[in-house]
Image (cartoon, rainbow, N blue to C red; front, side):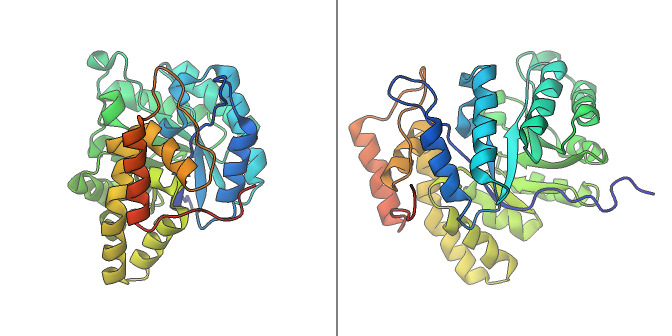
Length: 307
């Protein structure tokens, strides 16, 4: 029997949640859990811990474990939990994926190794992901984030990886519609293709993507989920209008101001944001006001019920 039959990758809208820090730069797990408690009652289908927006590269191993443990505890089974487990070595990615499984994550999100990228060929990436998937107790989602890593896996390579029964999806943040279409068309049955930004969530869903992992979901979870619902329901006029309305706030928390912009936006809607961890810098006053103004213009206001 085909090992992919009956397999189902992640679907719906996930927020790659921010990791919160106190004024002393240490983890603020109370604030983090308050945010996660809100997301667990929102229209989101799941959350991603230790993604790029979670500043995973700036955390030590002990902190990563504490973030995953706190996130799983706060979600308490109410939403799906994906944890970033990528590492520069295959050995490290395996260890982190096993640890995330022990802590209760449902999926492992494995970013491409990149430090020695001039020496990594197609076979290196195939071998890496297959080895991680063979050893991981939880399903693996491939994470392509070329803007940060400089690595963009070709659609035919992703299709080949999709034949592994424990590699269940890909998050691609490039926004390349032809590539999204190629991955969807060529992937094995049950393999999930996830848009990596709210900026192209509507077109990706129209092409057959199963959902998205979108930074804007941190501050506008219900709007992002509504965009997916409208699209899948065939209400395209309303979906397009909502997609257009979300473009500016999405840019503010991604390409415009990055993680510092996202944390400013979290504070603006009543969630816990705070400052990013150095060497990332918080926004200047004028930039922060620009983010708040963009949210207001898009109708993204204060959230309700955050303790």
